[in-house]
Length: 253
Ligand SMILES: [Zn+2]
Image (cartoon, rainbow, N blue to C red; front, top):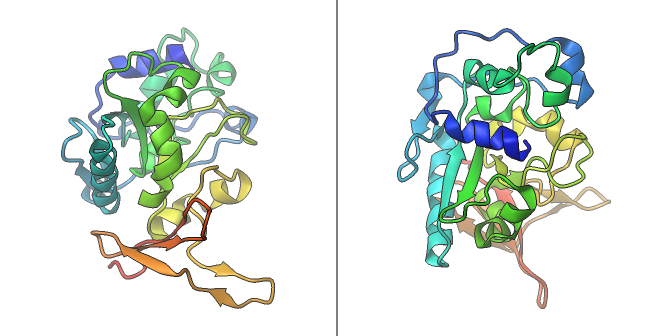
């Protein structure tokens, strides 16, 4: 989403709207930037994120969002959220905001805003972070260079988050260093299976288990238990930055 779109977004309320307008955009618009269809999370599966006013996310993602925020805070980094769950109706408002002829101008807008029915935010697993106190959230490079933006690139995968739209992404949409999707459970990973296959996200949360060329499982050496009951496997090699493997919530209900 480019600056003007983000500014528009910031003027709209964070709270979710009831889904009363689920009409998808014309198919060619979605195809133009390889936007993938996403259904809307059921209200019963959503929960407000404590400490993030107006931010509602998939219930199973909330403990990891809280852990991430606390870990950042412990390092002196104040992260907030600009947008979390968005209904398809709300996405339509965003997508058409400022356009006289929404359908006619949709192709241009689709590079920076997902069309309604094609946003990861509808799943409840996506969040747009902001660096509190920084007034440059609307600019990609500026956000990426904030302490929060840099911290997320280093640490977000440890909490089950991966960057959906990296710079120069294969999908062809705008760079969104603030937009992270949570893939900490098999259910969440399943929602993003097509995206993860077609448009790998660096940094990404690696597969739950690695297989060697011979097909043997490689068990990660360390396991860190997530509060929701899942595991984040931390693979450590001497002299290298730890790489984090999410096997989160394999035991979750
Ligand atoms: Zn977003």
